[in-house]
Image (cartoon, rainbow, N blue to C red; front, side):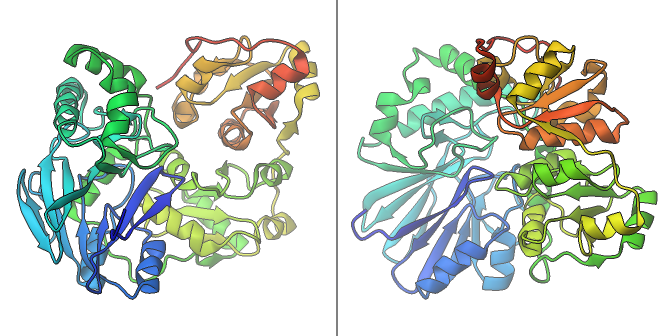
Length: 464
């Protein structure tokens, strides 16, 4: 990048990149920051940079934005699309407007599609084009999905996305492209694992740019989008109003087992962040298993409700600040707390539950022969690519409202590795189902052990 000092800060769980740009005069610009600003601040501090600008390409639906906090705490100037104005101080930009940033210039380019107001930003250094921040417009090998606003806007936005990508293709092949959304993001319509690209690389290899005309583009783009978490429908509005700036680092308040019991009586939710094997061995009745890992925030946002208190049960090796911070990224600003001492404390004076069997390939083969059914809780696209013959597909995010689609009798819940499957099993157990087991592996592990081929094709009972 020559003299350009651009530092990507990647959230693998949400599949997003925030960019920290050293402006060269002791100041920095941050593009599309999430609420968890710890790494961004650490990178800025390491370089002795003051964060002077916080910029957004669009109203984010998949995470709580960090621009309001950077404005209040760091004194950063917020730059954002003028359309869809925020409920807090910011500078609204429209197509063609520029902001001078010392030796750099940031120029807004209206690229609607992922959202109506979406802006990409041309970064110029000394008059030369240094690259383009494309947010949720052009991505590596794909483009941003267009179905997050409303059903009636999905196709018009897909057409707008086509025109936006055509506009971006007017720039030179060597132009660097820095998307926000990428692999692992529910805002992305497919794509590769790479995080950055160039105009030329996308012109040559992006499947959506190899199609002949707008109609083919729209059909292909909409054919690649899967389901998305329900919380996307509320976070955009929170970001528009301006999320609350938390008073300090999110933490988990210790709660006694008696306090947790009282909260449960009043309708609280218990989220167990321990690993699947620990949950299988015993857990608080009615609790939902969401193992703490990079994708924890997404599944918490999808499976828990912000209307009821959330109590965390964690393992001794899991950092409570990391858990609380991940929860805050998807709008759970204040958790009720954590079970002090963990599940061991609960088990001293309270009944646990019958353990969920965590089984391997040979046990799965035996149970299938004995008449058990398979519930595959992966996304529809994953299921369609290859699944155990006869398995019923109900995506994990829709399982609480689709229990009638689950086969009666003994059921084996499976996903790709076992973590999501344990979440599905916990939902079934909380509903009163018995005879539930979890396959500790994925379809390929079963196929190798059974000496059989996986099926491919449309889900038998995809619930949305």
